[in-house]
Image (tube, rainbow, N blue to C red; front, top):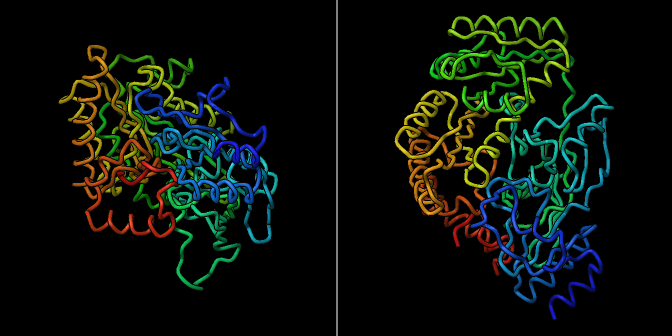
Amino acid sequence: MFLSELRQIFGDRMLEPEVNKYDQYRHDMVRDPAWHRTPAAVVFPENTDEVSALLQLASRQGVPVTSRGAGSGLAGGAIPAEGGIVCSLERMNRVIEIDPWNLTVTVEPGVVTRELDGMLAQHGLFFAGYPMSEEFCSIGGNVATNAGGGRAIKYGVTGAHVLGLQAVTADGTVLRLGGKRLKDVTGLNVLPLLVGSEGILGVITEITLRLTPRPAARRTLLASFTHAADATACVASLRAARAGVPSSIEYVDGRSARGAAENLRSTLLPDDGPDETGALLLIESEGSDLAAAEAQIDAYARIVGDAGGSILARAEDEASMEAMWKLRKAVPWWVKRRSGPYHSVEDVSVPTAAVAALVQGALDLSGRFRLDVSIFGHAGDGNFHINPMRAEELNEEEWAEELDRFLRALYAITVELGGTISGEHGIGRKRTKYLSIALGAAEIAAMRAVKAALDPQGILNPGVLLPE
């Protein structure tokens, strides 16, 4: 009965398990088969009214609904409940309005971040909260996980740029929160609760973002360090630079950088021995004009030299800068190629002053456990991807056990340093059993109370963010 009523709403915009394309909706970018689930149907709404109708029906029947954007999540947040419904928002992909006068853009959640950037560039603007996966992630997913990228050190993460939202709660009620205005203290500020809520409080159907003028000039350095400790010490010096904080400081361990460069056939790295490059830093400056950007990058180059690093390349045009960023963005793909589904993309976050201690702690852990570990991430804002990969000698059961022990140790170090277990990917399904390492019982109870107020039946993304 439920599926027939669902079919009346969506017609041929509804998939059932026998359809060939169905399998991709059983998971997000978490490819370990142990996490995959089979929903009863996948539906593709095209407007807010259809999302509301879906949730009214699901609420009456008590059927779980998992909202999904581009499926690019790395924490299992879009993995459906077994036998539930996937609400795919990929067809809700309109750019409703670009408003240069108010420096805002209003979009539907399925808009691909990179495609939006191309449209905004024509107006000399950009969405400064974009994440590193902007080529394929969607704005709705950015908001749902409060994602951050390489420029978060200067501009902040997605939530800093969200001015307004339209969202549908579990019973089909449509909420309209915020707008184009910069100031608003009319009632409780509910909007930030939806940002980063991973779909457990409502389905976001419209987003208004604050825009930023595009920088007039950029310059980029790629620096090499023999020792990881020298690279992390350099991060602290760069953040304190008199020339101003860089717009990006990205860290990659030497082994991961070499693997990514080999996959890309990149010539940016020297042909050194296996241990001669301990870490790389990618450093970027932005200026109001070319002279300002040049002066900043010169200052950063001197800091690198004082810290014992070497400048591998200096980019002064878009193609060269893109080549450097392409190398950095290729690192997680090298991890996937190296280990297939048997790796865990982590995104722990610490205060920036604790970056050196976090990296050293991760290096110490890699010697304690029978796992290969890749370390890279947004060093400038303290958000690191410390990714354990299965060693060849481990079978699947041994991998799962060793991974659990590694993650508990990593999270304990992170929290001891004043950090937390996720900076941008979210808790998803992968990290719910570790939530109590980072949060106390009172904090988790408060979150459950908010969840119960907006979704009393618990039908929205069950099993995500909060432990069942």
